[in-house]
Each structure stands twice: as C-alpha cells, then as structure tokens.
Amino acid sequence: MTASFMSGERTVVVLFIAGVLYYLPFSLLFPHGLALSLLALSAFFIEISYDNSSPSFSLFHSRPGASSGILLGSVTLPSLFLSKLIQFSRGFSSSQINLQELQYLTLQYWATSATSFCVLLFLAVVLRRRSSFSATGWGFGFSLCFLFLQPLICFLALAATFQTDLHLALKLSWVFCHGFAAVKLMQHFLQTFPSCASIGEVLLVSAGIVLYFGDMLLLTVIKLCQLLMPSELVTAQYEIGRSEIGIIIQGLLLGLLLYPIAFKYAIQIWDWCTNTESSESRRYNEIGRSLLFTTSFLLVMTVIVPSWMQFVHEFHMHPFFWVLSFVFSEPSKRLSLCIYWVIVIGVSVLRFYNISKNSKIERILLRKYYHLMAVMMFLPAVIFQPKFLDLAFGAALAVFLTLEIIRVWRIWPLGQPIHQFMNAFTDHRDSDLLIVSHFSLLLGCALPIWMSSGYNDRPLAPFAGILSLGIGDTMASIVGHKYGVLRWSKTGKKTIEGTAAGITSVLASCLLLLPILASTGYIFTQHWLSISLAVTASGLLEAYTAQLDNAFIPLFFYSLLCL
Image (cartoon, rainbow, N blue to C red):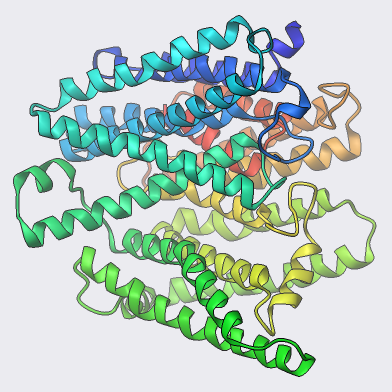
C-alpha cells in the first residue's frame, strides 16, 4: 500500500512543489503558494483513486504502459508560472519589471491554476459516478475539500488586487473560462486520438493550447476595444508590450492549429460533391483534394494570418517582408547559421534514416541522436543569436505542423511518403493517428528560450531544454542501455547508472557554459548548490516518470532554475 501511495514520480513531484514554495516571498505571493499546495494535494489523492480503480472504470483510452500522470500534469504549468512570478517579483523590486507585466503574469498563473482545478473537478465527478465510495476512499473526500478551497483563494487574491467589481468580474470570468475550455479540449483530444497520450500529458497540452489561444483572444479584444470604445479599463489593466517576433510566432502557430478545423469541413463538402466510385475518379478526387489544400493553406498563411498580425501589432510592412528584413539585418551571422542548420539537418536525417532501415539499433537509442543534433544546432544560436533562434523555432514548429497536417490527411503526393518516413523514428509513445515525439523535442528546447525572452536574471534558464533533453536524457539512455545494471524498479527499464550519467553530464555542461556566458556579458548570481539540486531533481523525474519526458522535464527544470 505504501509503494502505491508514494511512487517515485509522486515523491519527486512533491519535493519539486516543496522547492518552489521554499523560495516563495510570502509577503507578496502567499495566496498563490497556498493555492498551488491545495491543488497539488487534491491532484495527489485523485491520481491515487484513479490509478487504484478497476481497469473497467477508465472513461478514456489513454496511452498503454503509462500511469495517469494526473499529479504531474496538474502542477507543471501552475508551478512554472509561480516560479516566473517569483522571478518577476525580484525584477519588480529592482524596478526592471513594470506593474502591468507582473499583473498579466499573475492572471496567467490563476488561469493555469483554474484550468487544473476544472480538469480535476471533472475527473473527480467522473470517478465518483463510476466508482463506489469504498473504491474512492477517504483520500478522495480530502481531495474534494482541498479542491473547493482553491477557487475561494483565487477569488480572495484577485479581489485584493483589483479595486472595482467590474475588474474582478472580468478577471474571474476570464480565468475560469480557461478551465472550462481545457476540459472540453481534453475530452475531444482523448476521444479523437485514443491511446495516444496519458491524462497528464493531455492535461498539459490542453492547458497550454488554451492559454495560448486565450492570450491571442485577449490581445484581439484589446485592439477591438481600443478601436470601438477607448477606455483606461481595457488598456491600463490588460495591455503589455509585445515583440514582432512573438506576434509572428503566435499568428503562425494558431493559424496552423485552427486551419485543420476549417479544412475538415471543406473536405467533407468536396467529397460530397465528387464521385469516387471508379479508380480514375478517386485519382482525380485526390488531386482535387491536394489543390483544395494548397489553395486554402496559402490563403490562410499569406492573407488571413498576416492580416491578424497587422491588426494586433503595428507592422510597417507585410510580416513576411519584416521577417526577411530581420534576417538580412545581420546577413553574415544569420545566413551562415541557416546554412549550418541545413547541413546538420540534411546529413543527420539521411544518416539516421539509413541506419533505422538497415540496423538493429533500438529506436529509443536512434532517437537520442536527434537529441544530440538539437544540441549541435541550438546551443551556439542561443548564446550568440537568441532573437533569431526564437524566430527559427517558430518557423520549424510551423513546418512540423504543416507536415503533420499533410501526413494525417494523406494529401497527395506527399502524404504517404511523409507517413512512411516518420514511422521510421516512432516508438511506443507514438501512433498512426498522431506522432508527437518530434513536436515534444522541439517544444522542449524552445519553450524555456521563449519564456526567457524579456526579463531574465537566471542565465542558465534558457538552456533548460537543451541541457535536460539534448545532454541529460541522451546520456542517461545511452549509458543506461549499455552499462546499466541496477534498476530503479523491478518493472521499469531506467537504471541508476543511466540516471547518474545524465545528472553528471548536465552538471559538467553547466560548468562549461558558465565561463562562456560570462564572456558574453551575463552576470551569474545563482548559487551552485541550487543548480545542483535542480539538475538532480530533473534527473530523478526522468528516472521515475512514465510520462512523455520531452514535455515535462524541460518545464520542470526551467521552473527550478528560475528560483
């Protein structure tokens, strides 16, 4: 019973929460820390009740071989934003952060917290309906008590911050709309892509997408209100500065995420209007679908998305031409970097693809070579060209999304070849419906860098994804596979030797990075002991978790480095 109560993953997550709370400035952020504690306690007991329920209970078809991951999925984003609030509170006390930025980050924290609350409440209701009280146990009752205290704390914290009832009503409605939207998106994802992800993974993805869409919607509403009814209520409390690169990335990604919804209905109309009885007519139908995809895709990406970008931000030219002018503002450095990336990608992909077809090397090890390729590509850029790397990450993610749309819809003539090529690098965490590993690796490296743009007093924080995935995870897998003997558990494959190698390699990389960062002007203020603890905690999470480590470990490591 004790082993099932405190598994390795839960123990690491509890220690992670304790570490975040240890650095909390209680005079400023006590309600936020209390809300996170209650959220973690309720998620802890709900996960135990869910994992101990009978197999016939499960409402969703989650990824086989993975635990539910409810605790880890519930606390990752709230802990991340609380860590950023702790970091921003240091900047605010030194007058490097203005009040609007701090208030907006606080709103995002409560939005992620409300998202986890609504998902946990939904899971608790489903669990209670499908299980007897004896199956859920006393811990389930405690989880509900902790859960319902969380929105009360949110209400009191926001009421103390904003002076008028209208401000408070707007904030609360905005915050909890994120939660309701995340629950619907999570249900849709688990039903549309069964057995592709655990509940914790879907919770993390749903919360992130809803938060990103919410930011876009808020920005659009602000601009509309400024045009229709200029008011200090709108501008002073909600508006923060945005960079051109951030707007371009947001527009591209959201356009690509929304495009399949419209394309689905366009394809249904096309199939209804065309005859596919003979083989020749089916051939013409495929060509017609391809032309429909190309035309609609170009319309969205070259007209609709840029129009939104220019509406919410004052570009003096078409965003595409702005990107070209940005790249050619330092042509020798940025074009050289592009050429270097193309060479590394071309050589690596061809080499690894041939190995995957003709070699008996396990796919999990073959995929780790892509992690090393990410280190070779991104490490020089994040040191010497961070802004250009921000834009390059957005472009690469847009390419990945486009290729995945073509693969899933089997758009002629590239759909089937892309599908066959991608299948050469899949493992048990991917499926024919959805291949996520390359997305998680790219986002795992990109998110810490994107979140470090602007104010950042922790120079190692942008490297969280590159260090944890490109170096730590890779060394842990290679050493554990070749030399590992002592396993962390009887049923798992992770070894103590592999974990030790991963932790040691990341610490050694940090030691090598610090002089390089110091030579470029960064001032190092973080204690080495705190870095060692962050690296060790991330290594232990990699050893114990059955979740998609590319998604969780970079955010986990980044949160600790910000403290």
